[in-house]
Length: 393
Image: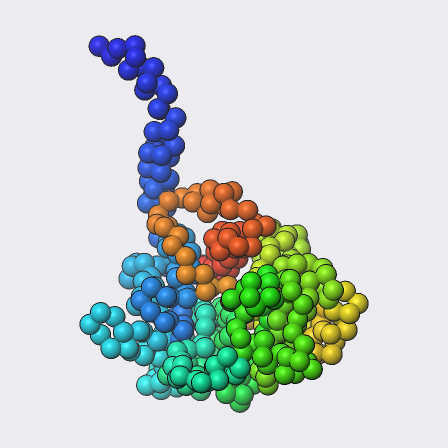
């Protein structure tokens, strides 16, 4: 017989057992019970710097959690199922898998078997030679591999012509993509890059904040009569022609961290928070009228800040995520480095995990990389994939 002391002990630990053992088992069982869903994807990532530095890892986690599979019903593998740069492993040399050997007909045939194409990053891989002026000049980089090319444009043209779903993200068209290829990409997508990218820094004092590159400070002072930005938080804007501009918090803008705002009524439904702080790299693009804005950036500029933006040729608000119809498919653009999270998110094989983690990560904590994934990236990409899957079926 069970003693009274043991009964009391079991009653006390049962809630913990239920939470840490039974709940995960039930969650895993539900995930296993749900059927797999075939969605044929092509992911292009030319900026894979190492076996564990895979920019598209977060997207593949979403694929696994939603149980999207290839035609053979196998799950997608983030290390093998993409086009782009494959860094050297323990025993292998770097490898490139792209469309360079594909004929026009081969590209057409490939697209005909696809549902979604996602261009996550085309910046590529660069070598950084020793530069004696690294503290004063933008580091000279030699391209090993990267940038959009003519075959990529052929692919994207077919995606558009065959009315498939296309997703492109920050740095899909910037350096080292040549300007003529970029123009073709812009015409295909119906967007225009202003040439500006921006990023938040929580402190411009370069002694207190070592993350501000010395060359950035030098180049800014060179262009602004020897003056550097005042200590405190702010935004840096870099133009492809070398120009550097800065906005100081409170003096030039009032939303300390750039905010991604999403209206309650938007093209993908009410899955996104109304406000998400975003401190990382973004690009400023202009869009054609047939685009619908899912989310936009809001820095809340002051009168002085608005004047600075105008002098740079930039609008009051910047698109963050946009969409337009492409016949049976859709065309999306993310104007931020959203996929480059490189987080250890754990196993995706537990139903309800996003809901749990979303509740544990404050959407307002911009320093928490996982918070952005659970509160914005996951609902955004999972909804886009679901729309593509529903359209296919």
